[in-house]
Length: 234
Image: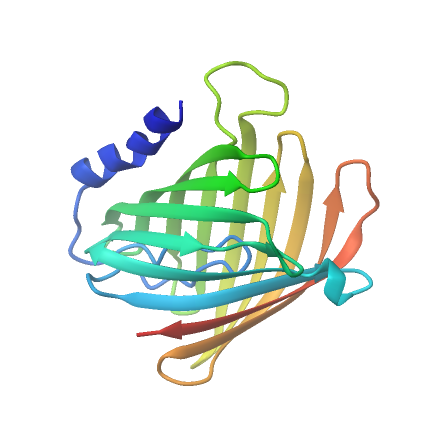
Protein backbone atom coordinates (compact mmCIF):
# COMPACT_ATOMS: atom_id res chain seq x y z
CA UNK A 1 0.00 0.00 0.00
CA UNK A 2 2.81 2.42 0.89
CA UNK A 3 4.55 1.85 -2.42
CA UNK A 4 1.39 2.15 -4.52
CA UNK A 5 0.38 5.43 -2.87
CA UNK A 6 3.87 6.85 -3.25
CA UNK A 7 3.86 6.06 -6.98
CA UNK A 8 0.60 7.95 -7.61
CA UNK A 9 2.14 11.44 -7.58
CA UNK A 10 5.02 10.27 -9.78
CA UNK A 11 2.51 9.36 -12.49
CA UNK A 12 1.15 12.90 -12.35
CA UNK A 13 4.66 14.32 -12.53
CA UNK A 14 5.34 12.41 -15.71
CA UNK A 15 2.11 13.32 -17.49
CA UNK A 16 1.35 16.84 -16.29
CA UNK A 17 0.50 19.45 -18.89
CA UNK A 18 2.45 22.70 -19.18
CA UNK A 19 1.02 26.22 -19.62
CA UNK A 20 2.82 29.40 -20.58
CA UNK A 21 1.25 31.64 -17.92
CA UNK A 22 0.14 30.88 -14.37
CA UNK A 23 -1.78 33.29 -12.11
CA UNK A 24 -0.07 34.87 -9.11
CA UNK A 25 -2.04 33.51 -6.12
CA UNK A 26 -0.88 33.59 -2.48
CA UNK A 27 -0.26 30.29 -0.70
CA UNK A 28 -2.60 29.45 2.20
CA UNK A 29 -0.83 30.00 5.52
CA UNK A 30 -2.09 26.99 7.52
CA UNK A 31 -2.31 24.31 4.81
CA UNK A 32 0.82 25.23 2.93
CA UNK A 33 1.56 24.37 -0.69
CA UNK A 34 4.82 22.99 -2.08
CA UNK A 35 5.64 26.25 -3.90
CA UNK A 36 2.97 28.12 -5.92
CA UNK A 37 1.44 26.47 -8.98
CA UNK A 38 3.66 27.09 -12.00
CA UNK A 39 6.80 27.60 -9.90
CA UNK A 40 9.97 28.08 -11.93
CA UNK A 41 12.76 25.51 -11.82
CA UNK A 42 15.35 26.27 -9.14
CA UNK A 43 13.01 28.13 -6.76
CA UNK A 44 13.95 27.39 -3.16
CA UNK A 45 12.09 28.27 0.03
CA UNK A 46 12.68 27.67 3.72
CA UNK A 47 9.91 28.43 6.20
CA UNK A 48 8.62 27.55 9.64
CA UNK A 49 5.03 27.51 10.89
CA UNK A 50 4.12 27.68 14.59
CA UNK A 51 0.56 27.20 15.88
CA UNK A 52 -0.93 27.16 19.36
CA UNK A 53 -4.32 27.07 21.02
CA UNK A 54 -5.74 28.56 24.20
CA UNK A 55 -4.26 29.51 26.58
CA UNK A 56 -1.39 30.09 24.13
CA UNK A 57 1.07 28.14 26.25
CA UNK A 58 4.46 27.15 24.87
CA UNK A 59 3.83 23.51 25.85
CA UNK A 60 0.88 23.44 23.41
CA UNK A 61 2.80 24.85 20.47
CA UNK A 62 3.08 22.81 17.29
CA UNK A 63 5.75 23.97 14.88
CA UNK A 64 7.37 22.68 11.71
CA UNK A 65 10.44 23.84 9.77
CA UNK A 66 10.40 22.85 6.10
CA UNK A 67 12.32 23.26 2.87
CA UNK A 68 10.69 23.42 -0.60
CA UNK A 69 12.44 23.13 -3.96
CA UNK A 70 11.11 23.32 -7.53
CA UNK A 71 13.15 20.70 -9.41
CA UNK A 72 11.34 21.44 -12.71
CA UNK A 73 8.87 24.06 -13.89
CA UNK A 74 5.62 23.44 -12.04
CA UNK A 75 6.99 20.46 -10.07
CA UNK A 76 8.27 20.73 -6.50
CA UNK A 77 9.33 18.64 -3.51
CA UNK A 78 9.17 19.40 0.22
CA UNK A 79 10.71 17.98 3.39
CA UNK A 80 9.16 18.91 6.75
CA UNK A 81 9.84 18.10 10.41
CA UNK A 82 6.66 18.55 12.52
CA UNK A 83 7.34 19.13 16.22
CA UNK A 84 4.95 18.92 19.16
CA UNK A 85 6.56 21.26 21.65
CA UNK A 86 10.16 20.05 21.89
CA UNK A 87 9.35 16.56 20.59
CA UNK A 88 9.92 15.60 16.95
CA UNK A 89 6.55 14.05 16.08
CA UNK A 90 6.91 13.01 12.43
CA UNK A 91 8.79 13.08 9.15
CA UNK A 92 6.90 14.52 6.19
CA UNK A 93 7.48 14.38 2.43
CA UNK A 94 5.49 16.46 -0.05
CA UNK A 95 5.31 16.32 -3.86
CA UNK A 96 3.36 18.76 -5.99
CA UNK A 97 2.71 18.98 -9.72
CA UNK A 98 1.08 21.80 -11.70
CA UNK A 99 -1.35 20.49 -14.32
CA UNK A 100 -1.81 23.66 -16.35
CA UNK A 101 -3.49 27.06 -16.50
CA UNK A 102 -6.61 28.33 -18.26
CA UNK A 103 -8.93 31.35 -18.55
CA UNK A 104 -6.14 33.47 -20.05
CA UNK A 105 -3.80 32.59 -17.20
CA UNK A 106 -6.29 33.42 -14.41
CA UNK A 107 -6.98 29.81 -13.34
CA UNK A 108 -4.61 26.95 -12.55
CA UNK A 109 -4.79 23.46 -11.09
CA UNK A 110 -2.51 20.72 -9.83
CA UNK A 111 -2.08 17.79 -7.44
CA UNK A 112 -0.28 17.37 -4.14
CA UNK A 113 0.87 14.21 -2.33
CA UNK A 114 1.89 14.08 1.33
CA UNK A 115 3.55 11.11 2.99
CA UNK A 116 3.93 11.25 6.77
CA UNK A 117 5.77 8.87 9.10
CA UNK A 118 4.40 9.19 12.65
CA UNK A 119 7.21 8.42 15.10
CA UNK A 120 5.04 7.50 18.11
CA UNK A 121 2.86 4.93 16.35
CA UNK A 122 5.28 3.90 13.62
CA UNK A 123 2.51 4.40 11.04
CA UNK A 124 2.94 5.86 7.56
CA UNK A 125 -0.02 7.82 6.19
CA UNK A 126 -0.72 9.07 2.67
CA UNK A 127 -2.69 12.14 1.60
CA UNK A 128 -3.65 13.10 -1.95
CA UNK A 129 -5.16 16.48 -2.88
CA UNK A 130 -6.44 18.25 -5.98
CA UNK A 131 -5.58 21.98 -6.10
CA UNK A 132 -7.53 24.66 -7.96
CA UNK A 133 -6.77 28.38 -7.88
CA UNK A 134 -8.27 31.41 -9.58
CA UNK A 135 -7.47 35.13 -9.73
CA UNK A 136 -10.67 37.15 -10.11
CA UNK A 137 -8.99 40.52 -10.61
CA UNK A 138 -5.96 42.52 -9.44
CA UNK A 139 -7.04 42.29 -5.78
CA UNK A 140 -9.13 39.14 -5.24
CA UNK A 141 -7.95 35.51 -5.60
CA UNK A 142 -8.68 32.07 -4.18
CA UNK A 143 -6.92 28.73 -3.68
CA UNK A 144 -8.84 25.52 -2.99
CA UNK A 145 -7.73 22.00 -2.06
CA UNK A 146 -9.81 18.84 -1.78
CA UNK A 147 -8.73 15.26 -1.25
CA UNK A 148 -8.39 12.25 1.02
CA UNK A 149 -6.33 11.84 4.18
CA UNK A 150 -4.90 8.58 5.56
CA UNK A 151 -5.68 6.73 2.33
CA UNK A 152 -6.54 3.04 2.60
CA UNK A 153 -7.81 0.56 -0.01
CA UNK A 154 -9.97 -1.03 2.65
CA UNK A 155 -12.99 0.59 4.31
CA UNK A 156 -11.46 0.99 7.73
CA UNK A 157 -13.02 3.29 10.29
CA UNK A 158 -11.31 6.67 10.41
CA UNK A 159 -9.43 6.16 7.13
CA UNK A 160 -9.95 7.97 3.80
CA UNK A 161 -11.11 11.10 5.58
CA UNK A 162 -12.20 14.10 3.52
CA UNK A 163 -9.85 17.09 3.48
CA UNK A 164 -11.07 20.49 2.31
CA UNK A 165 -9.14 23.75 2.44
CA UNK A 166 -10.57 26.98 1.03
CA UNK A 167 -8.62 30.26 1.11
CA UNK A 168 -9.76 33.68 -0.10
CA UNK A 169 -7.23 36.52 -0.50
CA UNK A 170 -7.37 40.29 -0.93
CA UNK A 171 -4.31 42.26 -2.06
CA UNK A 172 -4.77 45.28 0.21
CA UNK A 173 -1.67 47.15 -0.95
CA UNK A 174 1.79 46.29 -2.33
CA UNK A 175 3.41 43.81 0.05
CA UNK A 176 0.29 43.26 2.18
CA UNK A 177 -2.29 40.50 1.66
CA UNK A 178 -5.36 39.83 3.80
CA UNK A 179 -6.92 36.38 3.77
CA UNK A 180 -9.31 33.92 5.36
CA UNK A 181 -8.69 30.17 5.35
CA UNK A 182 -11.24 27.45 6.16
CA UNK A 183 -10.01 23.91 6.81
CA UNK A 184 -12.33 20.93 7.24
CA UNK A 185 -10.87 17.51 8.10
CA UNK A 186 -12.81 14.24 8.40
CA UNK A 187 -11.50 10.87 9.46
CA UNK A 188 -10.85 9.77 13.04
CA UNK A 189 -10.10 13.31 14.26
CA UNK A 190 -12.77 15.52 12.74
CA UNK A 191 -12.07 19.22 12.90
CA UNK A 192 -13.06 22.59 11.48
CA UNK A 193 -10.68 25.55 11.59
CA UNK A 194 -11.16 29.16 10.47
CA UNK A 195 -8.02 31.29 10.20
CA UNK A 196 -8.20 34.97 9.22
CA UNK A 197 -4.65 35.98 8.31
CA UNK A 198 -2.33 38.70 7.09
CA UNK A 199 0.74 38.20 4.88
CA UNK A 200 3.37 40.94 4.99
CA UNK A 201 6.41 41.00 2.72
CA UNK A 202 9.27 42.52 4.71
CA UNK A 203 11.87 42.30 1.92
CA UNK A 204 12.11 40.99 -1.63
CA UNK A 205 12.81 37.48 -0.27
CA UNK A 206 11.18 37.43 3.20
CA UNK A 207 7.54 37.13 4.19
CA UNK A 208 5.84 37.05 7.60
CA UNK A 209 2.32 35.67 8.05
CA UNK A 210 0.09 35.98 11.14
CA UNK A 211 -3.30 34.46 11.97
CA UNK A 212 -5.85 34.54 14.78
CA UNK A 213 -8.76 32.18 14.44
CA UNK A 214 -10.92 29.47 15.97
CA UNK A 215 -10.81 25.67 15.86
CA UNK A 216 -13.41 23.01 16.73
CA UNK A 217 -12.17 19.47 17.30
CA UNK A 218 -14.39 16.41 17.57
CA UNK A 219 -15.79 16.01 21.12
CA UNK A 220 -14.13 19.30 22.20
CA UNK A 221 -15.32 22.85 22.56
CA UNK A 222 -14.27 25.49 20.06
CA UNK A 223 -11.05 27.24 21.07
CA UNK A 224 -9.05 30.22 19.80
CA UNK A 225 -5.87 29.58 17.83
CA UNK A 226 -2.91 31.67 16.79
CA UNK A 227 -0.32 31.07 14.10
CA UNK A 228 2.91 32.51 12.75
CA UNK A 229 4.77 31.56 9.57
CA UNK A 230 8.14 33.04 8.60
CA UNK A 231 9.20 32.51 4.96
CA UNK A 232 12.58 33.00 3.28
CA UNK A 233 12.97 32.51 -0.48
CA UNK A 234 16.23 32.03 -2.36
